[in-house]
Image 1 (cartoon, rainbow, N blue to C red):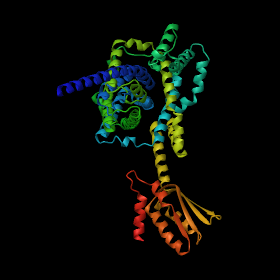
Image 2: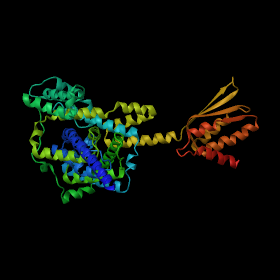
Image 3: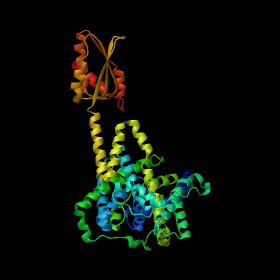
Image 4: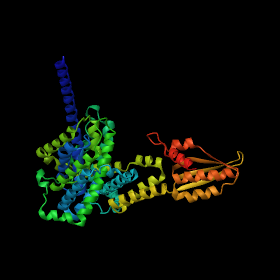
Length: 529
């Protein structure tokens, strides 16, 4: 009987194992189809060789996929790092980028070993959404020019302001230029992405829209022999590898490399862990180990730096495609990297048929999606201050740079926190009909605002019934409770009364374990009296 049960259990495990492998295999194909155009497009947008983006995708699957703390998350080159990487390449070239990414990986690995994964998540949502929106605006502005085979103007603000000029070039054909043909390919690409899901037959709807758009754009451009720019790609993957030398390792001590590495590490870690949190919400499997995920990202970026390729993060588009395609384990992420490797090994020449404007169009659409209007609506539900932080972060990123924007957003978040816990509004209303006075408290009643509360209490007439309204109060500390109870004794001596709804106050500040700090403080104060 025992042997039969064991056999049945083994058979059941075998069925589950086979089913998981089947789901992971199919999901890996979908992720590969999503990843291929994005890896290429991000590399082109950064001003790096196309193969560097694919190398990062391969490392993200084969290495990080095996070590990841979030099993269903897919790692690879990210749109959120385009602005930073493009600037690093402009300043230091591909060798400098490699050293910057290498050092960023070391920082991430050290942070993971020191269990700082949760600390990297300690960024206000308004700053995160503002950062993503700012990056989205910069990507949109620069790639809009690339979509018409033009060269971006330089700064993000310049690119944004000169978009009307790019539109004019795309609409009005000029002699000797092919901007209008590139614009047609770009519009065709975006239109395909928009209409693929609602219009595609059910049997082929699983094919990712960006891949369909790229193939269609390549076919149309090739069929008509359009005189536009195409991807310049090497036939050999290893030709894109830039191995470090002893001289390049010495650059690790330079201020430029250190500053760039800190920026890449901060943004990549925040984006990765934010993505991991989002992936956890998409499935019911194992939850993310943030420190392990951070360590795996560090190892991945160290390898990418040594190979001279783009930095990586966990990416939500590929990760959500992975989950939605039915992936059950980390095998799907690993397999998608194998398909990338096989593709560039067998069919590298096909990549040179892809128009640059088509890849730029995909990133224009990606940039637009990063400016998430729904995020603003969600922030508005909390307070207008959150939207101000969002707008300030976005505006500073577009006007100056990414690091300045994030620092500005974090500074405003800290200032708002200080304001919230130091601000107290006291309003007194007299109700002649009911012969009582109501004191409304709004904000945080802490020792910092004790003088304001004391001054308000001194203005209350003798011989009246005072009701204290705590409905808008965020916090009250021991000092303010002590003041209220001591003032109550003095007020009763003049014939007045103080009415406090202790039950409401307890309910507002009740902790999860059932204990209430207000109760404890009140009892301690009363015992002292």
